[in-house]
Image 1: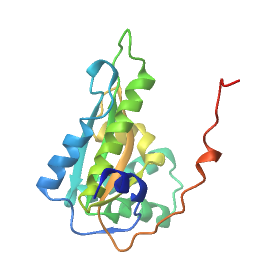
Image 2: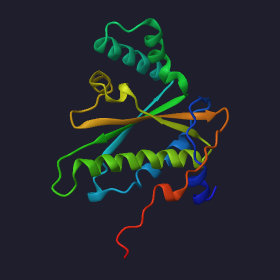
Image 3: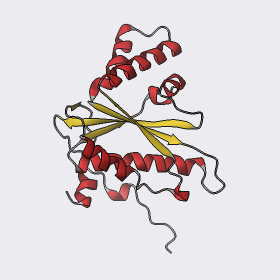
Length: 186
């Protein structure tokens, strides 16, 4: 797949099945992530790879977090949280690692982490691995952060679910003119 086709055809795939990416595919995905634009060369990100029974453990962490926040959660809501990590054979947690720097504000570090996650997703798609980037309440929950071992200067920027899509749903591309304005020309 050429680069332009990759950029124009990549879609998010919410329903993912086996197989998970192979070690060789993962190596390329992580290497692509490490090529993200990065002011100061800080590499302000890291990744957690969750597969197998780790997905069930993550579901339990989600349930614990929900119960800590809202003891009135109903059984259906708890089941949904418990089973959320089972929607794909592998999840990569993308984490921004933010450090004080005189020339690189936190927002640039967060953006670099986002670019790294996007590079990982693009590399996955280029190799025939489908993905969806999810966030939601659990990505911003202090209990989840603690249980996943995040430090005080770290934040989850997304859960990247990986596997094979049952089908691809191509979305129409909006008109470029809706998002681009010419500025400064007399």
